[in-house]
Image (cartoon, rainbow, N blue to C red):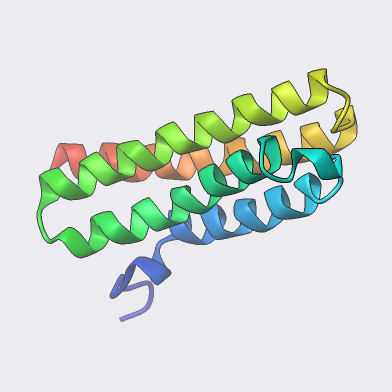
Length: 122
């Protein structure tokens, strides 16, 4: 059947989270070298945790666990956004890169929010 979800890898929310992680890695590559163990590491870990939490929730086997992990993914997404705003305030990211990244966050957030709402209704 077309569009059948067999794995977390089939979820648009997971795919957009992976795309966002790649964007965050590219943007944070321009951070100062002395931030390697600071903001660079923090924003990358938060970005990776978005897709990771979607996958882990999928694998937990219960609706409540799945929702809990999807909500953690959403929290990590807000964490990434906040950290990138801080990076801009510190002069590590220009407005254009921040806007591009925020657009990716908004798109992933809309899809993730829709997934959460659809599961909550079941």
